[in-house]
Image (tube, rainbow, N blue to C red; front, side):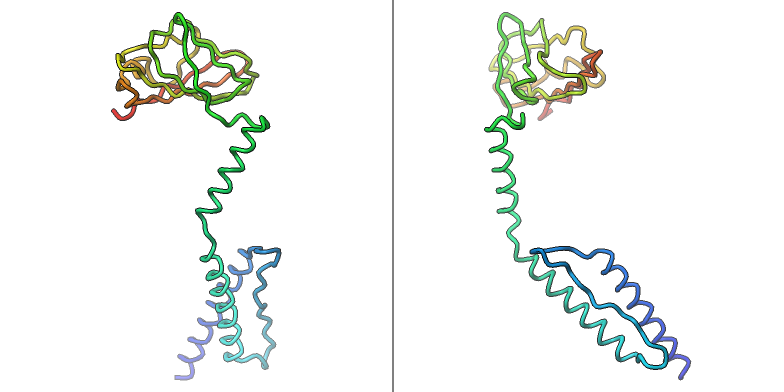
Length: 202
């Protein structure tokens, strides 16, 4: 019987030590106050199982209290605040995070990377001359493509290397703005590479 009790105590102490180590590993800092779990420093022939259990319960109660305080944080407000920060940065010109609407003219479509990395176009003609201007080596961006009411318009990417997708993904976009296709580009300083996503909805 004594053997069984000692074995159970050893298991509980071992479990406690595992939890204590993990809680110390993953301490977090909230409101400039670091989470401080109490350390377990047993003294041979002095520290009892009751001492270990008491400290175990104190640390768990502390963890529960901190989790409860985190549950009260309004995540939606935090996300909205972050979105506003991004919009403010874009408006200030510090970061090119905005999406700029562009259009082609006489079959010519130019993307200006100095204005933004993301562009959007609703095709109303075939694009036979496509280019990206003012991009530096190592830069990339995206183009959201939609079709007008007629639909079926194409983009000829010229000398660009199409590494994924097919041009017919663009002609297959549903008309009247009801569908779209996501095109990404990357300038490695030598070649312009293009990846064409599948139209959606398909």
